[in-house]
Structures are given as C-alpha cells and as structure tokens.
Amino acid sequence: MIDPPSQHMAHLITLTATGFVPFRSTKETDPPSSFSLIAPMLFWGYHPMAAMAVRAFSSPRRRLRSDVFLLMVLFLVSASCSTSEPQGFCAVGYEADCGLSSEKILIKGGTVVNAHRKEVADVYIEDGIVVSVRPNIKVGDHVKIIDATGKYVMPGGIDPHTHLEMEFMGTVTIDDFFTGQAAALAGGTTMHIDFVIPVNGNLTAGLESYMNKAKKAVMDYGFHMAITKWDEGVSKDMELMVNEHGINSFKFFMAYKGSLMISDELLLQGLQKCKSLGAIAMVHAENGDAVAEGQKRMIDLGITGPEGHALSRPPVLEGEATARAIRLANFVNTPLYVVHVMSIDAMEEIAKARKEGQRVIGEPVASGLILDDSWLWHPDYTTAAKYVMSPPIRTSGHDKALRAALSTGVLQLVGTDHCTFNSTQKALGSEDFRKIPNGVNGIEERMHLIWDKMVESGQMTVTDYVRVTSTECAKVFNIYPRKGAILEGSDADIIILNPNASFKIASASHHSRSDTNVYEGTTGKGKVEATISQGRVVYEDGKLKVTPGSGRYIRMPPFGYLFDGMEKADAAYFASLNAPIQRTKSAA
Ligand SMILES: NC(=O)NCCC(=O)O
Ligand SMILES: [Zn+2]
Image (cartoon, rainbow, N blue to C red):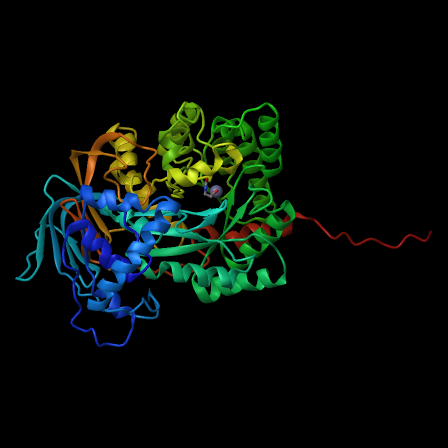
C-alpha cells in the first residue's frame, strides 16, 4: 500500500518500505519541471513493515492522525530532497522523451505471443520501442539480457475499465494513479483506460481534474469520459474531447438513479453524437429505476445487509438495459460497448445482436468471470461487503457461462472495473446495503486469474489470451499496433510469464492500498515474473521500480475499426426507406 499524494510522500514510502535513503537528485537546483519526478526511483519490494505502515494509513480516522505525523516527517525529508511538485505530465504528442534514461534490452529464447501467432524468438528493445523480433539476435555490450527460455513473452495487459481516485458514493476509491498503476505493473498490466467523471456535468473540468490526478502516473494510460447530463455545452465539449484531447469513448450510466444515471432520451442524444464523432458509446447496463424499486423492496422486507445488494438488482434488470441499449444503438446505427457484463441475461442479448450483425462489444470483468455471489451471504459484514459491486456478482453458473462466451468470441475482452474501497469505506453501508460503496479490486490480479482460469485450464489458447487481455482493447480504442502487440515499432510494454510458476493472492502482499482483496487466498499457475513498461524493466524478482510522473497520456483517435463501413449501412438504410412518396394533392 503505497500511495503518495505527492512526490514527497513517494520519498517517505521508499524509506518506510525498504529502508533505503531516498535518491537525491543531482539537479536539485533545477526549476520545477516534470523532470524532477525522475529523481526518486522507487524500489518497491514487498516488506511486511511496509504493509503495516501502509495499512496504518488506510482508515480515514487513522489517516488523519497519521497525516500529522507524515507532515512532520515530510517536512524533514523535503529539507534534503527536491521540493518540486509534478508539473504537467508526459503527454504523447507533446514531449517525445520524458527525460527517462532508456534501456537496451534483449529478451532471449522465449515464446513470443501475439494475438495472431506465437513463435520462439528474441525481442530487442531500444528507447522504449520494440526494434526487432526474430530468432538469434546478436547484440553488443551494455544491453540487459533477460533469459526467457521456457516462458511466454507477451504484450503487457491493457485494462479497459478502471476507476482510480474516483469520487463515488460519498467517498473516493482508495487506489490512485500511483498505487493503482503500481499494482497493475506488478500484475502484468502496462496500460489502462480510466473513466473521467465530469465535475457537475462539465467535461472540461472533469478532464482537468483527472489530468491532475494522473500526474503521479507510473505507466501509460488513456481516458474514457462519462456523460452525466445533456445540453449544448456537453455536446460541444464532446467534440473538444475527441478532436483536441484524444478521448474516443463516452460512457452512459443507465443505473445509479439520482447521481450518474441518464435517461433514455439522453442516451439517444449521446449515441447520435458519438456516431457523428467516431467515438464509441459505452453503457453500464442496468435498469436504474427498477433497481431503486428493488432496493426499496428489500429494505421494506427488512433485508439491510450486503445480500440485499444482489437481491435488489437481479440479472433480468441487466438483461433489460443491455437489450434496450443495443436496440437504441441499432436504431442510431453506431457501435456499442457494454461494460462489465455480469450475467447470462446480458451476455445472451449481446450474442443475439452480434449474430444479427450488429457491432456490439461485450466486456466481462475478472470478478464476474471468477467469483459467485455466495460471498454476499457471508456472516461477517466486512467479508460480505467487499464483494458489493454493480451489476452484482451473480449466482454460480453465470461465471462459467461468461467464461464460455469469452472463449468462443461472444464476449471480446476482459476488464476489471478496479474500483477499490477499504473495509472502513465499505463500513459506510453496515446498516443499509444501499450505502456500501460499489466496487472491487482486480487491476493486479486480472492477468494471473485469466491465465489460470482460461489458459491453464485448457479453455483458451495462448494467442486468444493475448487477444482478450491486450490486443482487442488496443484495436477497439484505436491504438493498435502501438499497443497490444510485440511487433517492430510497437511500444515495449511486455510481460514475461512463467507457466510453471505459481501465484498466490493476499491482501498482505498485494500492492493496492486496500486492506482487503476479493481474491484473498486464491492460488493458481502462471506467474508474471517480469514487466517491461516503456522499454524499462519495472517489475522483476518480486520488486517494483517505478517512477512517479513517467506515465504517459495516450491519445486515442476516433473512427477506429468498429466504424469501418458504417456509412454503407447508413446508405443502405436510407435507400430502403422508399420515401418520401410524391403525392398529388387531392381536390377535396
Ligand atoms: N462497478 C462498480 O460497482 N463500481 C464502479 C462504477 C461502475 O462502473 O459502475
Ligand atoms: Zn459501471
């Protein structure tokens, strides 16, 4: 658990976690700039003391007390370190080089896997880019050699669905762009796409706020944007987001009545706007009005615990909203992306639409593929509450059906919806399940869980694993083959996975700031042993080496492959109308 809200805190965590003296910049007199972020290279191996220290700052009350202590320590630490705050961020298109030293790396003898093929080959990396992929590459001195014999060399995972430092249900998700991304890297994910939540409906203010949050980023990231209200300003701002700010997807919440939920009328406006901009419309598909009724029903029945969450929003409400969104997208003739598909009901609506030729993407998440809802009935509140997310984790059987749909191409890519709250935050709903902050962890666990459950079990090929964890996301959001592939010219975001090693998940050793983990105690085969991000080894031998501020904002251009040929379908539609009919005016 590490999350410095500032560079100063990063120094402190380095001290606490490893006992190292913080790296002291030789450029202390330089003016504040993003370069100052490069100084503290955080060597972050797991250490029980670090875990204790981090956990000690988890609960809001303890945090307040410890913040005073931290401020004192920070004052002392900052006296000997650069005091510069991060300025700006490494944005693709603005700065070619963020000033980080590049590494030359040769990964030797592994099985290199892309979504389209696997081959035994070497991979040579220079300046953050894959330079060559072929057998027997010879290199000179000063090249770091990594022996990957017997291991898989794959594109780093891309998580299409995260919520870092999100204000939600009266609190803020506990992982921010530092801890959340560090956790991601430790688990083999090298890029994620987070959701910008507008400020009072204002998109520009929302983006500014998230750009600030992301200043401490340690890996590449992109943004989707939520749409929570509709007027001329929002419509114009959507144009700005796409054409100026590199956002090519907008999310519409059909649930969370009274906060994020939008009406069908707004959804329709939004779908039309997305189509005109070449942006992907995404939906959280649950019938929010019916959920509110279901919640009232449970409370009237005296069901106030976490089980009430699942009982109040059954699969039929997810299926209904999914079907509605699909039909509206069909009416508009624009692609639709359904986030966190949690039930057979929703999955079957997607299957039906795809069979009929509609461009619908279905994203299951790790929790829905792996877990079942029996946890919500656990007698211990803290245990039960950590499984509360929306749509809910379903009864046993939905998970298996979703895995089958993923392996057969009915669903296309896997996210996490990493939206983590610690047990103190989850306790906000101890008297009323409606107040339990919705969300579970997953950003660190996804790559391991999907490997073990899908590949190790024999249900999915290794190439399909790469497709669902990385390549398809890069393609849908139009950043392939820069991301999602190990090809000459691709970004060197790479993992090395040992299929014979094992993993064990535990809150005591994970890198999230949370004190709980919904996969607590889970073991499996297939271990990410090294993560390379932007051409630098950031995770190796169980240790993280991350640099706050080194994460780059990845712009995602509009009109990705899902829009190819859409205009022909539009033309066919107009031709089919057989209208208007020329009528003569009747004499009467
Ligand atoms: N899924 C969830 O429970 N929390 C995050 C917000 C959302 O994606 O609905
Ligand atoms: Zn959602």
